[in-house]
Length: 390
Figure 1 (cartoon, rainbow, N blue to C red):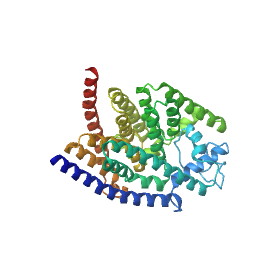
Figure 2: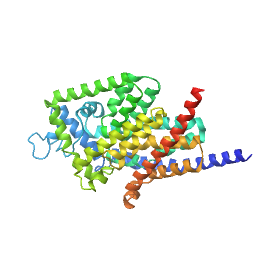
Figure 3: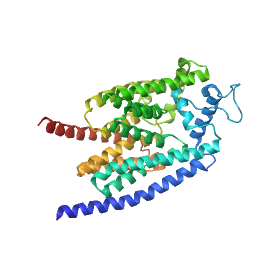
Figure 4: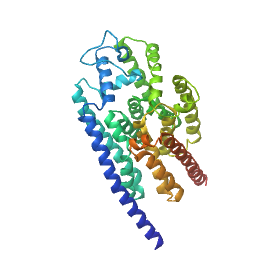
């Protein structure tokens, strides 16, 4: 009787919370889509990517068409951004077909809606084995992440990249490795978000995925080198020169190094090396963990150890889902505590995070939650390995 009463109370709490999260999600998406599609001075990151791709269509390397360049085309404008690798412009042929800026905004509205549907299906699937109330909560918890709004209003790739990584997740599960590698290649349009997940392909021994991914990156890069008539070394130097610009404007572990007196460029490289070592060791030690937990590990280390801004918090969707799954597996106070912390760190609007200077607290929460996942996963793995041996 007590168990049934407790389960009823839990379902009621989850349902009420889900209704509240639906309202929050609606507000975030309504504001975000309005800025993406209508507001004149918004979606400027998307506009920058559109500008860059227009120069690629004309055979010009966009990061050469900056202020003072004789190659500036008035109807496109001056490029004041940088840092994207050559294969990103190859992927850009899909993200930015040769259409006007106004049509591009509408095109990305469609891409983002489709990507949100992919996330919704994935989240619902994660929660459904525990019940319909749990599935609804998992779905709404993911949709209520505040970075959806900032991603849309800036015209960033985060929502689309999450969808691509979820598709990679599904393809790995179904052993469709060639397609997994190709989709992962598309997701590498922003390596600071997607690159850590490459280690999952290695640890899963998905050699077909690694080969198809590598071929996509190589072919895409060669294609852009031919179009722009530039060398790989030249492009790499251009990208590295932008590291100070990135490090100064984002927030991540890079700031801990710059506070110690490191130059932003040095801090970016040093923390990148630390991140590669950390994720390689952890992924190897956790190779028997669930695929969702492996994705969560990559999301946290990638978020902390490379340049990011607040809209990139969407990459922590896998952390949120892993914590939700652990909580539904074992509904105890410690798991609920970590779920509450992670959820609030992702649900709170950016204006509150900025006003209260909670950026550092967010990073601490994510690292602590990752540690909790690693500990829980170790017990889980030991239990199942013991059953297998018996």
